[in-house]
Image (cartoon, rainbow, N blue to C red):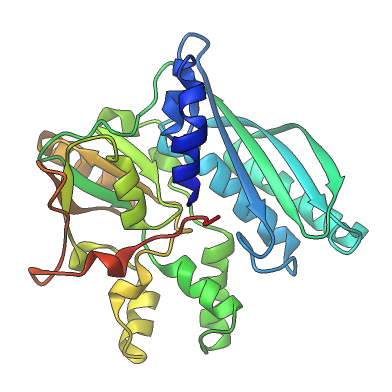
Length: 319
């Protein structure tokens, strides 16, 4: 079983008496009455980060990936709690100073406050982060409409190339490696969109497990499907150059996750509003496809040619 099958089979039913749990099928807990929005994420050495060589960067990655859940719901994060487990090699004085310095830097950048946590011993490093924001509305999953446009913020794929470089699966020059590794550890969150997303988005999710995997989750309770043009999916110039130089295929870099951009749908009538907002903010927001009427017709195309959907599976934890 994967993580989502476990949730659906064993835990979804026991959350039914709590509407704020959103049937355990969204990124957050949402208590509208108390304007409370909460996300919980767990991170483990060897799974979510290769090793503990760069504790200052690891802590940035896991904090950003946690608050990304709230941002994708149109909610500004305000508080976070962090629980850390590790051994004396992980939590040396040098490493703890680096972790503390990075957390302080992130707090200033995103205007969030450390509010509590826990520390325990374990053989491998792991962290759990709870992020909290306050709002009387969020952008839910499964609210897409037929013929909605599909949009994505920023670029896709840089993070995956960074992971390949960290794991020594590819050879690139020092400067390029630094760029892509930084994109893996320090995703550029679209924080600018947080207070504006609910003006045009029908439904939204952050891209953590892979663009198409998360697109599937975005509409998994609806009798809908999608059509996406791979040529329109935005990638950085550096990734374009790498693909061209080493004769790689763009589609191999689009479904691996850790992008932490926002994937959302919006009515066709919102195109001009989104265009104006994108121009005003000087940010990249790209229309990559549209929502279709039937759940039986997922289409991923390159130059109008349908692709094998199995080539675009994202990440999920297997048990």
